[in-house]
Amino acid sequence: MDQSALLDILKEIGNIAAGSSGTALSELLKKRISLEVPVVDIIIAYPENLKIKTEGERVVAIFSKILAGLGGEVIFFLREKEAFRLIDLSTKTEERENQIRIFTEMSISLLKEVGNIVICSYLNALGFFLKKILIPSFPVFLSGFVDEVLNVTLSFYQEEDYAYLIETIFAIEEEKIKGSFYFLLSPQTAKLVTENLSS
Image 1 (spheres, helix red, strand yellow):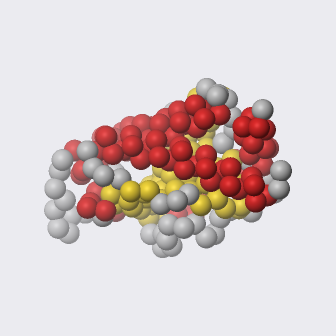
Image 2 (tube, rainbow, N blue to C red; image 1 turned 45 degrees about the vertical axis):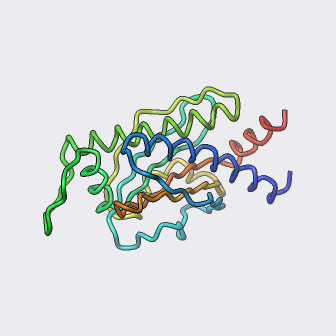
């Protein structure tokens, strides 16, 4: 299979899985979620051109490794200020002007719970499409500057020449919240996915 056909398949997979995640997030927050068309990037070592512009900003990531059924990671990615908006939306709390915010044990737990629901929905849709049972690890919470967070989430792929990154940007426009679903997979995993669909 040529690279172009492979990327088209990965984009379609990302579209189906992110659609399921978007629906789960919409039902959880009782808000309309809009999704952009997925973008598939081939990244070498670390992606320096992620579609969500976060240079110099603090970000939050909730990520899980896929432990069984397939290899890869799913990441729920937000700017820090928008993560706080998501917390307020989930707890029906109004943000106070010029309020200094820090992540508490309760807010981290809430974000991990939201991230876990979104990630499990992503993997359930992906597993149904591939006819596989995909089991994620417990969600991990990370907060920091974007490079720091990416260094951790992408550290499992340092030995690979390259990896595939399927990105779908989502937005809750009325709440000014925008983030991304990422599915990161190795060339070997991408090959297994396409072979599974062809069989």
